[in-house]
Amino acid sequence: MKKYFRRDLNSLKDLFDFLGKFAEKDNLDATILKDISVAVEEIFTNLIKYNQYSTTHIQIDISKRGPALVITITDSNGKQFDITKSETYDTCQPLVKRPIGKVGLHLVKKLMDQVTYEFKDKKSKITLTKNLKESHVRH
Image (cartoon, rainbow, N blue to C red; front, side, top):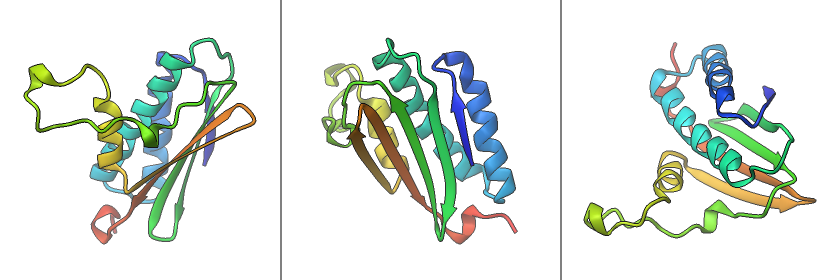
């Protein structure tokens, strides 16, 4: 499934509905829907926040490929920012010593089994892969 979303926080409801419809169609359980919703929402809001001068829509593609769920988020006319190379967030530090920010990207990397980034022709393409277990699919 593919859909384009306005780069606006008001698009989050439509985005969650889109993910929910996919999960329903493919009989995915609530746990996996929650994980992908958190990860996609984090990437989506970061693209809005850090590429605020773009007027293009953000494209979300989601599909099941064998035993994996693959979500590709594409943003045009943006600056290059490879989220796979973002600083590691040290969860062992006391809260008062942790830097502000980077928690969301840390969470995305923990929730997903693989995160890749590609930048070509002024397009950022972030691909999130979640390996599905038998327990993730309702029967």
